[in-house]
Length: 163
Image 1 (cartoon, rainbow, N blue to C red):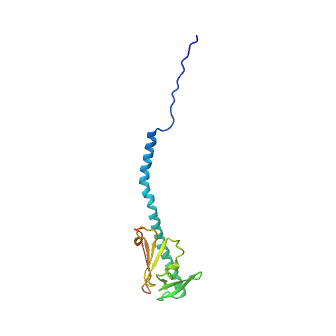
Image 2 (cartoon, rainbow, N blue to C red):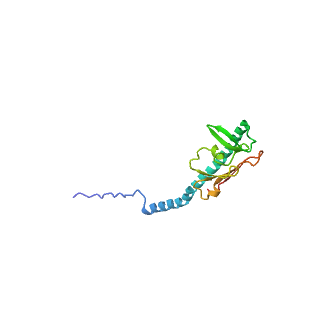
Image 3 (cartoon, rainbow, N blue to C red):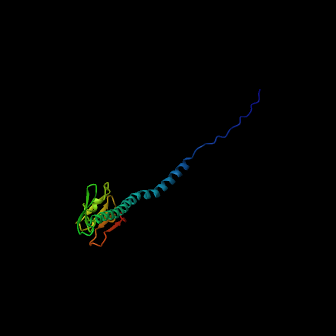
């Protein structure tokens, strides 16, 4: 009879993760997501604040351009006037700066794409642009007040704490 040789047994090792390892990874990802999610939600607030800041700069630029046109046309010192700014657009002014109406400062701004709502008082009053979708509209806005006299400048202010 032939001698039987013992067969070498190879140990089989598994390649992969255990169930416990997978659960630990899922728990860690859940914890990271819980801390990261509030930061991503805050991006909308930052975007609205950015809209208000950009509008602030746009109004200041528009003031300068309209005042320059008023100087050229000779109506910079007039209490009320209309200044043509091009493309058939005329802006109502107070002492050379746009007044606080949709025919004044509202005319100087291009389409705002539904981002802003203009609340304008009388032409000599204050125009308020509120950013749509803000948490507190009164604290996410830009306010424009035209000058009260010939040698004064308009006042533009912004509030972004409630965006």
